[in-house]
Every structure is written in structure tokens, then in C-alpha cells.
Length: 155
Image 1 (tube, rainbow, N blue to C red):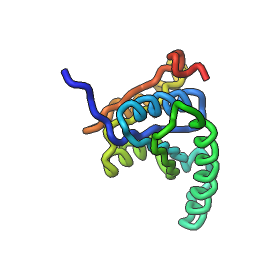
Image 2: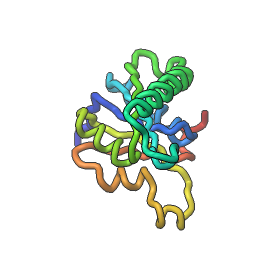
Image 3: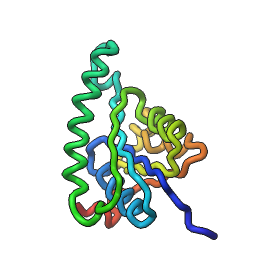
Image 4: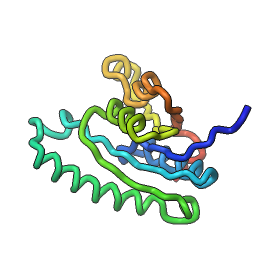
């Protein structure tokens, strides 16, 4: 069995501990394989805003969040762990699972890396989780789920 060769890795990122773990694992993989990493933050419009955003409002919100994300990621990837890895960031508005899957498919990513949060059973049954939806509906792209207790999560 051959080892997969990933060239483009997409990290679903929301700023929580689990997504920081996912970013660290993605960086390790990318460094060993010479791959590039994109950190994608999806803002769920219905959760973040009381009304649908106009095109101008959405553009401004995206600009602000992208600047914040780039700054946060730059801080997180300092050091040897990310040396030589090309990292880019993007922010979009929509349903997180749907947008991550669509982004990966339309832009040709080989691997999606996401963290798993410990949400309660009832919440997961009623609402589902972004990670579960990504794993369930991913087509043509592999998905790696990072558990919050893995060594890479010891930040």
C-alpha cells in the first residue's frame, strides 16, 4: 500500500482549540510532503448576524475577518514546525460544512483536516456537527479528523 501524496491541504478553522490542533497536524503533514496549506474560516451568516448581509456588508465582514485570521495564523505558525510551508488564508460566509466541502472540491484539495470538539450527544443528534457532515459528505477528497487529546494538541 502506498503512502498518499497530498499537495493541497485545507484546514477548517474556527479559532477553537480543536481547529488549532488541526492546523498543527496539517502543517506537519505539509512539511513532510512539500504540500501547501489553506486555512479556511467559514462564518455562518445566521449565527453571526441578525439579518442577511448585503453584498457590500459581506465584503466588509470578510475583509475584517480575513485580516484577523491572517494575524492569528501567523502567530500560530511561528517556528520550525511551519518552516518552508506555504500557508494561505481565506474567509467565506455560509454553512461551514457545505462551504468547506465545496471549497475543497472546486479548488482541487487532496485533504481536509478538521478538529473534533467534544459536544454533547443530544446537541450532536439534534444539530449535527460540522466535522460529522464533512466526513459523511466528502467526495473525492480525504478527511482527517484530529481528536482533542492527541499529542499535536498539547499547545
